[in-house]
Length: 535
Picture 1: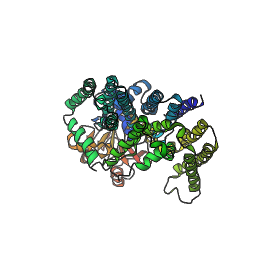
Picture 2 (picture 1 turned 180 degrees about the vertical axis):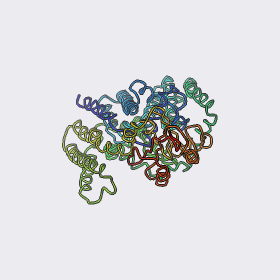
Picture 3 (picture 1 turned 45 degrees about the horizontal axis):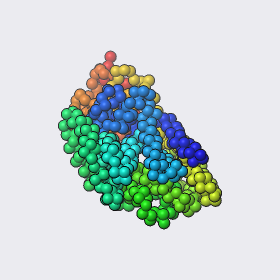
Picture 4 (picture 1 turned 90 degrees about the vertical axis):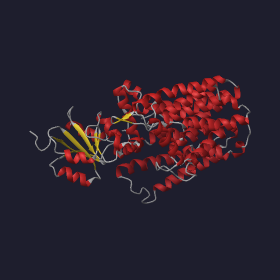
């Protein structure tokens, strides 16, 4: 009963303050703006950013956001809610699977572990695709396991449907990871044919092909871009500048799954068991880890689909999982955190508005970690020890909220737009001179004319490579030379936005008599402006 209650508390706590902080650029603002434009246009086929095709990611996650925005409006809550709901759905699948293959107590341990991992919590609260991807990969992996163990093709069909939806969420990785985990397991269990079915393959193609065909009719180079740039180059080259050493993900796996990674490592004797579920959980962790480590594209969120495997392993270890060594190391981490607070200059170049809440958060987290690590190390009841270990992380969405709010206020344009809005009329043309962020479009609720020589401000690999195709004198993307040639054009009502670091552009605009009407840490707005011949 205690573990069941705590699992519910952990699920609720993961969603606290979900919609109270501004959208943070770059990822949150861009992804929310794509969804907002999808909801406004009712075009659930081709994702668009600032009115231009955004082909860097497929449509499922955008569509989930857009559907909620049609109900709740274009708010931070609607933008973030899908990530949270997908996280809860993953926890539900994990619970069902663990209870089916073990017992309810171990299943609850797995769920609590999953919902109190730093990596899980972080991406349950961010407007990004990986929580949705982790859900579909989890469903696929679990279904493939059941197909192997039960020789039931209905599970195979479900797995291929889940992989198709995962591909429509973030690309071919949703197909590769489940199969890479399931194939060695199926070979070991002598059930390789259980992974394949005609119905599953037909369902996979039937879900993906119509969308690919429809988008290709609008953007003919879509398939080439997805296969060559977004998949092949991402995995085999460093063209996207996201590379790292082979061991890049190891600290993220350990830290991202704290304290449960410590408990699993301390239980190394139990890890040697050749029980099928133990082997399966290890494959779930190690095979994707090797795959991503060999890839040339490396980002911390890539390993989020490993976290259910770690949680399953902790649950499967059951009474043999060693919590005391994990509690000791966890408490030591808290001590290091507290000692770090008294070392002068450790905060580095942190802004004052961020430093104060960050130090408070570090103090609270350090004290909680030391106290809970101590309790977990001395109590005799295992459920009490499990709860003590998870408590600092379950409460993290609450304790870290002031820090995240301070960071978000600085890295979002919500305040800037609030200052700018009184100067805007319905017909005001907003021109970003080498300045654009997703949150700017999201909070302004309108398309921005971007004057740029490469479209890098849109943070889209596709638009960066397709600049020549989409830049022109009439669309939302125009060359910087257009700005200089038309800055005094009469008589449209205009507002110009530039970056605070763009001193030359500021001087150029101010030399024409334009006045500042809004500013924040990253942007300055000038106008409204009617041109030299204004009446």
